Length: 76
Image (cartoon, rainbow, N blue to C red; front, side, top):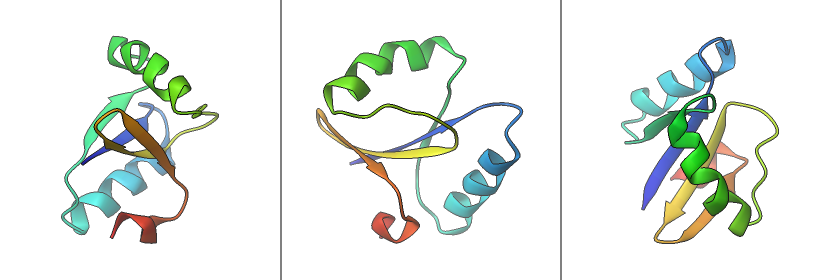
């Protein structure tokens, strides 16, 4: 299982979410929504019925399955 954190450089809430994950020793991969990496993942997100409308967004990825995490308690 992999945790993906979708962020933007100018997003203050993204910094808060990043620090929360670090403080709770949750390993994650950060992806800037303005980067090429995001473009490659867009198809996978859509195939899993996920449309990112804002950042930060946390996605739990297990193989080809992805799930949007709407509540931090779902991380544990």
